[in-house]
Amino acid sequence: MLKRIFTWWNGATLGALFDIGRRGVLVGQDEQGNRYFVERRASQDGGKRRYVIYKGLAEASRVPPDWHAWMHYTIDEPPSVKPLKRQTWEKPHLPNQTGTVRAYRPKGSLARGGVRAAATADYEAWTPGDKP
Image 1: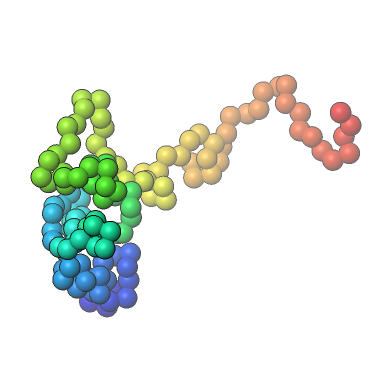
Image 2: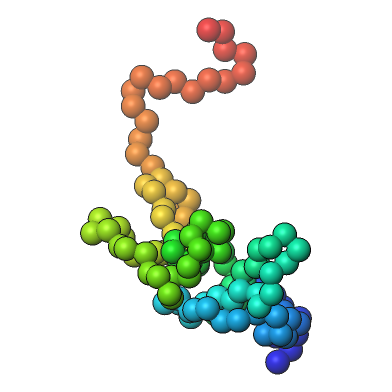
């Protein structure tokens, strides 16, 4: 319960949940369990704000492309009403893996032991005082 009150990175705070619950309407949920809302009433400029409440860690890269398009007003209908057509060449959405055990670590990376291929013979290290 204390996590809900004081942390924003573990989902939403109680204040945010109360505010979105009071002013918003649930329009859908993605595969990861993130829930998407839209305001009941339009603002002064005529638009309606859109919200996401993350299930677990609040990380923006966890929003799939179709819901991202809806959140940023690229498409009008939420994917729960009008799903986007998936192309055969499209891969499933993955959130940013940086900082996790599944992050990409190329050869020579310190995270893989820091061993790199030996330099070729035409390389000579420069030291201060050397003349070209």
